Image (cartoon, rainbow, N blue to C red; front, side):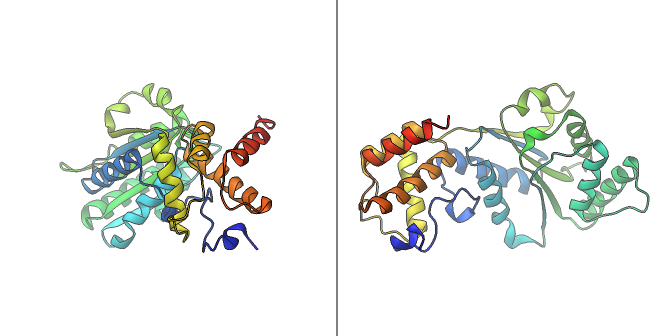
Length: 274
């Protein structure tokens, strides 16, 4: 039996999978989500969301996708989860697959022309909003960024034909700054920072509640939450990982609350792997 079943929960509360149901709407995450929605609906073009590993970018992307999921008639939403391809040819070939198009000829130029025709057909003739979201954007090499810059040139007098959202680690920023006329195409730039201590507490309680826990009962002591925040530095993925381990250890020890002893022990064990 899983530990969450022992606690009477109906789901794993601290999974690190990008489940929108467990997306904690911190101030920064909510701001990023709302600004992305506005940029896409206004067809502004390129949005760049940066953040360190574990700040919740992937979960944010899935939540954004879900926000448009009921409007399939107006929005065509496409995702590339990992843009790590071996060549420019493979990258642009994958773009055509994502868009669901396949030209008869298969040169890089043919693929570019096919994408351009597709964007004009869907974006102008059918008045659709085409969205391409790229996760793990720090893996985009200079040539791939140049291809994306070219696609952003396709526009009407009123709007961009491709709504490009890039979620990436901070290391992407110096690379895009080197590309002529790339940064001035960014309509939305946003950096997601880690949570503060109060948000860490709220995230823990939110996730427990989403999993079916009655938060009128105390499961994490305030001192334990403070230690979790200090250990994780407010990074959501680290918070989820240590909370999972804390619940598991609490069940194994037969305790009914996570105290500082449990957290300190787990931090000490984790430090041995560092």
